[in-house]
Length: 301
Image (cartoon, rainbow, N blue to C red; front, side):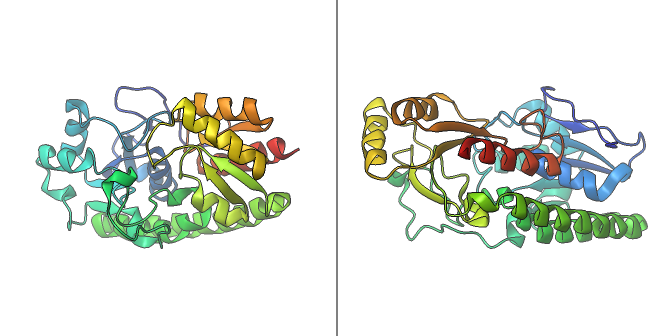
């Protein structure tokens, strides 16, 4: 039975129930990082999440309620790699909280512990939403959560030294369960290897690389730019020359581009949960990848 309940659609996003007198107040930028803190800290942390599963993490507002959460946080855990560049610097500055500023122990950027892919050769903003450090959506490859979890457990122990043994014990348990799950997911997803797909946005690159699938075409003319009807018609023409099995989109994206291309190409449009809480099955980190694999397998039939 799960120890934590995820409450959706609260004004500040998600939060995990924990002990009334938790040692740490943690603010996570995205649900996946809140869920990882819950795995590692258990009842030692009260966790709030800045974004909901249906929000584009690139684009939210540093509203007063969120600034108040940041003001009281002992630890701020975010994706990094410029994913939150549109709102996080303002949130940190307006919070006035010295503990969560860059360079302080209370500031944790997950991207620092992962090798990023798709680093741009130039920073030409006319090419769309370009991230200088590389593609920031690395959490969709579950292998990337292992180094992040190790670093995060060490940071929790640094901030809350009295409970260091607690965090280490939970890290060891999480790593064992997570590695076993990765093996299970890879075996289950073996029939997907080599399968060509289309993607609505470049946020599945790490997942496809992990599973050996191939992204043949993006529906966006430029990263982060909504496709026009004329561009989607061009995509359909190209897919007649280079067929794919399905078109993928994240649950926080509009379904219309993927559905239009699917209808005119005779392929499946597949919504995948991008984070914890994005589907009924994605109730925790394990559920996210369980659901992703099953949806891909179902669409491939």
